[in-house]
Amino acid sequence: MQLHNIQRKTKLKKSKRVGRGATRGTYSGKGRKGQKARAGRKMRPEMRDIIKKIHKKRGYKFASIQEKPVIINIMKLQAFPDGTKVSPKFLVEKKLIQGKSGKIPSVKVLGSGDIKNKLIFSGFLFSKEAKVKIEKAGGSIK
Image (cartoon, rainbow, N blue to C red; front, side, top):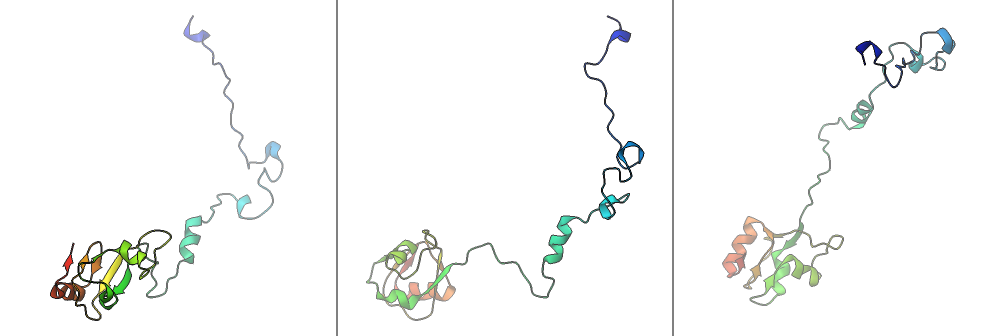
């Protein structure tokens, strides 16, 4: 076999050049008139339309993705006896807070009111004032 005897298995097929008259008729497969029929047409990007719809007013912010903790005050925990281990799960069982879609939410303890019982806290977020009041009453935070 010689180099000049080699042939392709499939023949080269040239792509059709649309929009130049000839055999495709007057509109050349582009339909009639309008932006899509013009030479050098450029369509407006979809992303631009999405950006245009976003508020441009002062102070506008997107809603936060991060979940906010459920808030409970110290005075509501006053009812439990000394030495009680308090956790978010315990509060859901006692119906002091509600679970979100079957899950136990994060809970933040705020320092409004007084506490005199020695409670053991675990799995909470605390405000500075709440921490001080719990430790002053003899409770502990784990």
